[in-house]
Image (cartoon, rainbow, N blue to C red; front, side, top):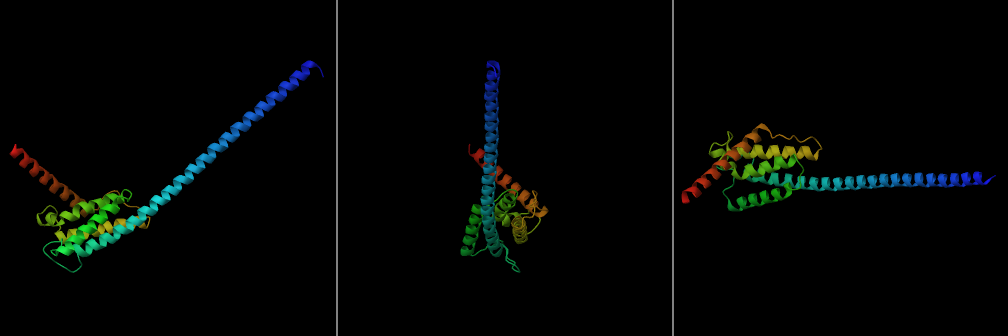
Length: 197
């Protein structure tokens, strides 16, 4: 073996070592990327599981508060002048129940949150909406329908059934009536403020 052959052999060993080392480095880097992706995926799945568990617990709380509101605002087989009770203690409890419902709704995922937030807007004004003709249904009917439809959507969510993006026809009417009422109130406030200038 001559000097040229020795150099070629050494260069071959060096190049082979470099190739082996480079390929080994690339393989370990790719493996590390896969491990990081798996870890991120696992963490994301765990976080999603925790978020869903929290949302499920809050959805259960929403059902409890909706049931309480149904008993206070639209009890079965009871007809009265207003949906909101005359009794101060019952009225106060209905307001507390609405406040708890509002706090729980924050944790819900869309589109369920939209359904619950619509109930939170409509129910406090249901007497005015029904009495003043902003909606077709009377106040107690509207309260009962709004609560029942919202309970149905929460039930769908808890059963892992699809929750529709759109509101039901009746609830859409209540939401539109509520918005019209708010627009009128805002217009009256602006008119009064403009008259004061």
